[in-house]
Image (cartoon, rainbow, N blue to C red):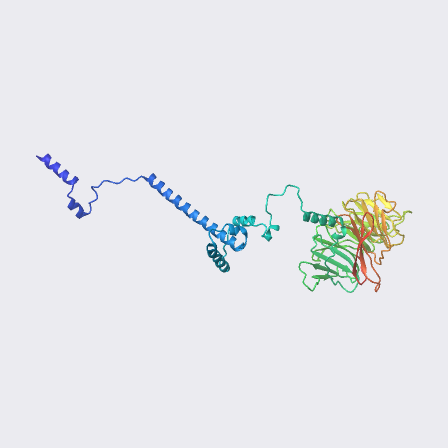
Length: 475
């Protein structure tokens, strides 16, 4: 009898009274769970999104086409294409014209218009009425090698400038830097072109910085490194960090970029007969220059009849000594000296009119020499080698400029005369492309203007001249 009672209790728990379940909040326990097909739901959602996107894109395309047609009607109101594409009678065109006027009025407020493709197609339909077609390239690309007539003219102009060396002379702008009241006898330009150093007969050396210079054009430093001696030569080293100063005394000096001393050559013993045994020069210096490859080495020449090489790191003694000699073997005074472009040769111009060249490693005998290069008793003021290393130019105190082939050192290749020079430091130099040779002339006070003359290297014809100043000058 107990078993049925237990079963009845179980049935009561499994199926409670609906009213009691609703009262207690358990009315949903007896319902069956719903099932969902997720793949079908996702597929339906995707289709709906695709359809909606398609409708939006179609609406935008129609809007762009209508707007392009409106703009085209505004730009081409009288063209046949606009009349043929119109739908309906004149009453149909009137609202479009009104829309065009409305769009023009609203163009100041908002930038609207067709895409680039629609504008291109509009130009293609009306090529005769579009003035910008000549400026804009339309059509297939040009074949390779095609040149327009304008391009040919441009190429001809460029080729003409290349063939005309005068066009390369930098004389378009000019400024005047006031060094002092006496002759400017030395100029040195920094290799980078940022600074200039000048020296003169007033014993002053002035430093100019083009980047830091204001409208007053004043030097940022002025000093007298050699006291009461005239400045004869100033030159920056190949790296531009030091400056060689050659003056009227017997000791050359080296300054840094800001004018502070780096080294001073030692003075030799003037009572020693053989100048090779002295440690330095014993008489006034005439010229000097830096080695083109070795930044620590430089060269000087003096009235003691020697040409000496020096090392910046050793101021107690020279590195080497070269002694020019006359035909009779007597001592002659070198007035100028220089290195070849590769630094293997050393050349000196002497007072007897000769030019003597040594191998840098053999100081006893000359490798090349010309005994009658210039008039005897005149000071050869400058020697310079061409960049290709085959030619040597000399500026003589006999008012001449000559160019030589050092391999045939008997007579000059060409010569220019009547180039007045009143100073023993008048220079000459080659242009960077080796096609032009330039030198300067000087005049007496009140005698006119000093000039720069430019000569063709091959023919020695005068190409150009520049009036420098109405005063005494040296280049």
